Amino acid sequence: MDGFETFVQVDLGALERNIDAIRRRVEFRKILLPVKANAYGHGLIEQSRSGEYSSPLVRWLQDRSAVDWLGVATVDEGVLLRAAGVTLPILKLSPAQNHELTRAVEAGLTLTVVDPVTIWAASAAAETLDRPTEVHLKIDTGMRRIGGPPALAAKLAELVEQSPYLHLQGVFTHFAASENPAEDDFTKQQLDKFVEAVTAIEDSLGRGIDLKHAANSGAVERWPDSWFDMVRPGILTYGYPQSPEPPIHVDPVLSLVSHVSFVKTVRAGETVSYGRTWTAPRDTKIATVPIGYGDGYSRRLSNQATVAILGQRYVQVGAICMDQLMVDLGPDSTIGVGEQVTLIGRDGSEFIGANDLGALGGTISYEILCDIANRVARVYIG
Image 1: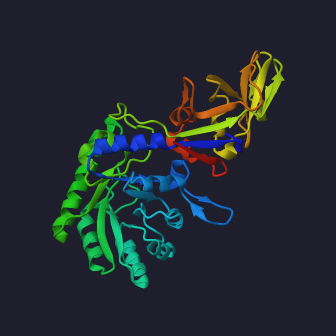
Image 2: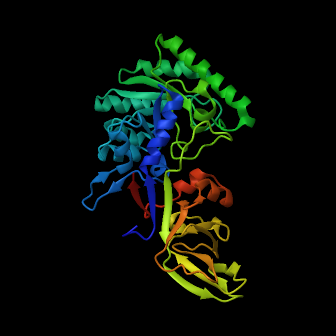
Image 3: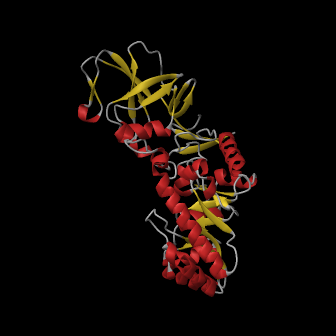
C-alpha cells in the first residue's frame, strides 16, 4: 500500500461477518469484545500529530452497534478509548491498582473486584469522586489467576452491596480449557462452581445479577450452558476458532503485508544473515523484506516461515533481523523490488494464518497477533 513499507490490513467486512455469525449462535446474549493488547494486534488507539486520540476500529464497531461491551486489560486502554470518543461500556477485566482507581472511575470504567481489599478501594475512589460505580465480581473457578473463591462469593457480593457508591452489576469467571474436549470434565466443574456461586449471590442479595458471563471463545463454540447473559469471544471474533470442530465459520481479520526492498544473487555455498544459519544449496536470488522482530515478526520463525508473493509461497531463509528478513526466490525468479509480500493473510490461493506461524514458533495465534509492533501502520478496509 502506498506510503507504508510494512503494514497491517484490517478487514472490517470480515470482522462484521464474524460478529454476525457469533450473534446468530448466541442469540440474545450481549457480546463483550476484548480489545486489550492493542485489540489483539488489530490496532486500538491512534494519536494525531496534534495529540488527539482516535480509535478507528472501535468507533467503527460502536457506530454500527456491532458489540455491546468492550474488555480492556489496563486502565490506560480504557481511558484512551474514552479520549477517542468511545462511549460503549468498558470492563477492566482485572482489578485496577489503587493509584489508577481515580482515573478509572473518572473515565466511567466498570471495575473488577475480587476480594475485600479491591472492594474497599473501589468504594473509596467512587466516594472521593462522589460517583456511583458499577463493578463486576470475578470468581476463580479453576483458572487460578485472579478472582475470589466460590465459597466466599455471597459474602463478597454482600460487601459490595454495603457500599452506597458501588453497584454489583455483574459476576464472571474464566475457563482454562473450554476449547479442549479432553478437558471437558474440568470445564464442567468450573461451570458448576460458577452456577453455585451465582445462585448463592442472588439468594443472599434477594435479586438477580444483571450480567453473568463466563464464555470465552472456546465456550462460545462448545458450551452453550455457559452463555448466560453475555459472552466474551476474543480470538474467535478476530477470525481464529479454538475448538477442533468449530460450529461457525469465521475469517481472519488481519493481514500483515510488506514488500520486496532489494533483490540480489547469492552463489551456492554462500551464507545469509547473522550466524550463517542458512547456506545456499545452489545459485539463487534472495529478496530482502523490510520487516523483522522489531516489528513483531519473531526470530523464532527463522528458516521455517514462508511468505506469499504473487500467489506463490517462498521460504524465509537466514536469521530474521530486527528490521529485515530474507526470502529465497529461486534461481529463475523475475520478482523485483516493490512486489507485495504477504506474511499473514491471503495472496491468491495461498493463505498463511497466525496459527500457522504460531505452530512453527512454538506458540499460539494470540501471541503472533499481539506481538505486531505499534510502529507497523494499521490500515482499515471494508
